[in-house]
Length: 341
Ligand code: CUA
Image (cartoon, rainbow, N blue to C red):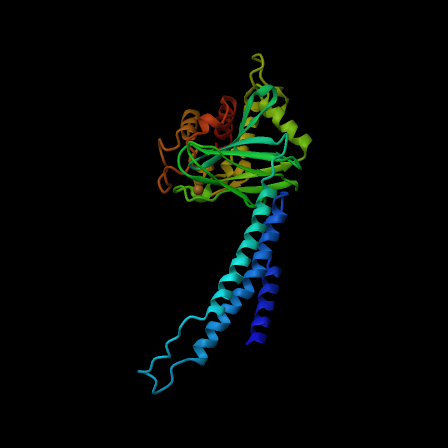
């Protein structure tokens, strides 16, 4: 029995270590958490196997035989030595594992001076990320941009119901609770794009409540932040427009195209010009083909005013009027009006 248990444990542990459980490993916090997980597997598997082996053995060895239907086993009284062992061993194991887990927690939550503060706001069903830009101007983005190798402090809150801010590639996760700020820390280490996921069932649009994290070089991050905190971000160099600094039609459409990408519209809509193929919301090439600019604007800022047949109200974020600048909104309307015709 011991041999069978030992072999089963060895196979179980080998399998657990061989399976690639984890998503991309893009933050300093990932490695210690993954190691903790592996250690827990290594410790738990032999215990699981031990319990199962004893149960299966007993089911087989002490099964009822013909003629024993009315018999009962001998009454058993306490066994002090056994009870001491089965209390002490799990207690020692639990205390050791808890101490180890606590050490990992302390490590991943370590505070760093000069951490970048990102204010994360959740609303049914979208994320917005607030930064302090140049000259203290606040910058809001629906995509999360982070510089590589700089510790980040996320201050998380919600405007409506419980959500949960989760970046699987960073392994960190924290509830977004209306009325309070919760905090979580991560230091992105790998350049690339990863998902932000809502990990708390928050309503009909829970499954589509996603955003993208872009981990970029510090220089690229500074450029992005500077561009976003500029008073009038004009795409394309601001060449168009002869009315004194106001962006022209072409510029507005370019800003709109960028906004369409930044605000995550492609996640839910089809729009050929942007290469978007989302199916949660209406196909914009089709549904905006005969829409006026005013109708398009209403559909963005007050999406439930008129919901196309076959689509759920309440899925599209209701806060674009707040999260987009006036110019981004104008740009988006111009862009959509142009490319859907
Ligand atoms: Cu927000 Cu689920």
